Length: 501
Ligand code: FRU
Image (tube, rainbow, N blue to C red; front, side):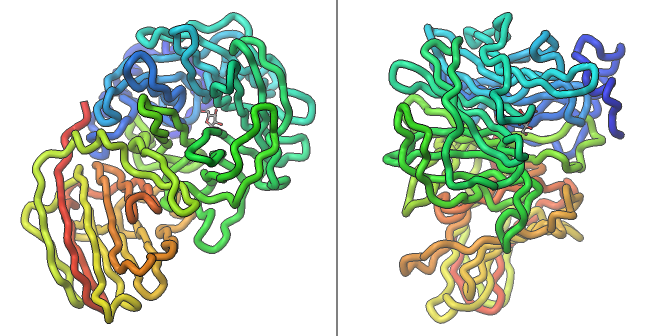
């Protein structure tokens, strides 16, 4: 059931008596609640925000509409962690409803200054004609309490040449000062990102557009992020309005990266390579990164997309975040590996191996709804150019999710056509991508993190990832390996995973 505008733009204190309790109870009893992913108690979660390592732990916030599963009045909800695996609930991090965020505290980022965490975000305001006015705002916290907002926005207007779609500041330290990148739409309705500079996070000077070779690439760029990794500058952004192109760009909106020469301190020119999707799956958007205590670059994404309906929408809650992923570079590609701390969730291990030819096989105890599964598949020398090999999981009487590798094309496919209830079926039910040069190796490695209603697949140690929400029957717990049209050796490990705390 969709809410009216009036219902959507209510603050928590405007909830009807008993409304919150009812919603929370509905969410709690949903069979698709996750076991170790970050999810809202109730209502709708979207973008990760304010990701930072501060005061000895990670702080992560997310966009949250408490009163339903529509995109309504957005709060920031706050969680903390020391290992990126177990998360502690820290309550509301930012509250909307002020003069500069009357219709939502939209996405933004965090940075430490003078011992305090500074949250820079977009205040969303709708006027009486429902025209949008974005303000870039600042709130300050010691990490233990809600952000205290400055009375005035730090960027109070949209510069000439851009529409009201101007949001999602990502701030970073640059020499003695700070820079931020903001997602924008030009007056000609093409998407872009702009840069600002500040010495104190309070006074910001508009530098101009980040210069890329993409003069017309979608109608809006949401959630930009810029950082340096090794000798590369990395720009992440989420362009909207890109047409599908073969196996690429199949989702409603895209999320990807471009590698290039690091930005000069005073420069806006970004010399870059092609736009590459970050994730090959169905449900991935609006990622944000931060630097960990050892200099590692960690990314978290929203495991969902705007403007699609999801099977939990009528169950009082929607969406979750992806697992944190550590980024690195290999052969000119961004590599994503599950954060090291996630091994802390592992429980009982079962090892297995088999040589399969035109058959499928399952193993005692290797099944469930919350587990990590690593499988190395080595097609025999004569079958390294034909045959399809893979894993079926969340299998039940009528359900299965299929991850496969087709040797002839070097293609990996995740098929959720028979997974159960489906989000966004209009956008197709399978996603594929071709792996890069295997450098003579015949072995394909899959590492899966399955939770009650999702899977995250890491292929060949993070060369590709496939992220998907899955909504199977709770009885669909089976796992089997298969070899069609050829012979392959399979070797793997299974761990049931503990609930994150
Ligand atoms: C991306 C996004 C952002 C915006 C936020 C609002 O999903 O649309 O651009 O700040 O969500 O919740």
